Image 1: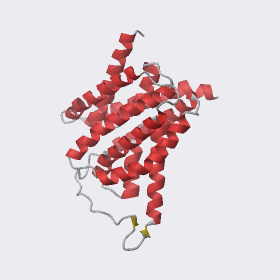
Image 2: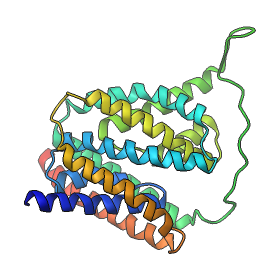
Image 3: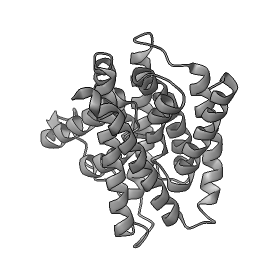
Image 4: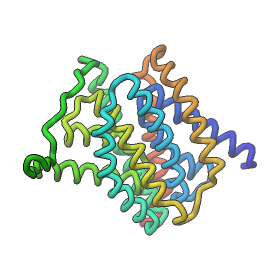
Amino acid sequence: MTPETTLLAALLAGALIGLSLGALGGGGSILAVPVLVYLLGQSPAQATTGSLVVVATTSLAGAVAAARSGHVLLARGVAFGAVATGGAVLGAKASAHVDDDVLLAAFAALMLLVGALMAVRLVRRPGDGPSHAARPALDDPILTFSPTFACACPRALKVLLTATLMGGLTGFLGVGGGFLVVPALLLALALPLPYAAGTSLVVITITSAAALATRAGVGPAPDWGLVLALTAASALTAVVGARLADRVDTRRLSAAFTALVLAVAAYTATRALPSLL
């Protein structure tokens, strides 16, 4: 493709990602790596680095919007994200030593998992039931130092393991992992779902930024012009997607997006797996 055509493809793909993020509340950034590899000609190593820019930017924008609606527990999100940075750094370093075909095969498996989880959500009709939750009260702290030292060590271990796993996923594959961060927050911090969803965006922003900083200067750099175009288009159209969600049947949009994710996952697998056999 000519440079002009490639730039146009980046803008259109970014618009699709942003629309899905805005209309469906997440999931769109999972497409960033396949778009960068198969549509924009980046290597898997370049794509997983460039994807972190898309993930961090869109998550930050989403976190601001969620905070305005009162669904972000900032202190807990920052604490969980700080713990998760260890995994993000390790994952980012590990990805530099993995073959491109292995990265793509792992990413295809991840996309198949995401598509399956989205299909399950469609069947269960997550829109049914109560949509509001009371703001949770502060839990008993995990660690206390005054008047005496005390540790809720089983709970601390649960937070450490789940946060490290989520951070490692972000650093290794360049994805936000919101579909796993939300359950992790439900499990480790016992947050109500609306607050887990909003707070997860803070966690993803922190881990994506940490992984991106770790990758800086290591391995091949992506085409930053294309990455920025993809990111800008995604951020702008996310606003349109959020407005679109109030006017259309998001269940149909979600079904279409689930089919798209599964199709891209299958295509990625057919391209990556033969090279491993």
